[in-house]
Length: 210
Ligand code: GRF
Image (cartoon, rainbow, N blue to C red):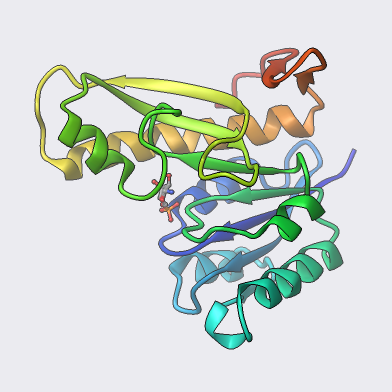
């Protein structure tokens, strides 16, 4: 079985690195291309270091977002991507892009959705004084972090801590949860409940890699 995936980044790309290190080249899963919304993203370097084609698609280089999205979609399709993984991709993608890859885009978000969608999720959670934060991997629909949830993992925060330490905890979870979701999807273990498409059904657990 071959399962080509594309990864979209905007910055550091530590989630991309986790995918390259723990998923890429295993069980038929291949990262076939990496795209970034920013030319200077470290994630592009990480991709090239791994021998994966990488390119920036900055909105400023196109007449507008629609044209950028169309060029990006063409490029991803040209590489045969079956799944598009948003791993720290910090821009919204328009409806035509979402429809082009309908049900085939996942995102990792640093909160227990539906709490704290959008940017600054960890800051929002801390400002709210929550005792539980976490990570969500979800399918992408046309809203902001609003698509059906694939996996979630919580992190207890019994007392206040500096945000840097909390970000590190969140990253640790992201680097396990996103690869695990990709492995499950590639294995065909992730489906929607036909009676309630918001409910994602996980048919079987993965083999413990993550
Ligand atoms: C992650 O925390 C992700 O959840 C958020 O942006 C961060 C990206 O980190 N959307 P990296 O680029 O993968 O290191």
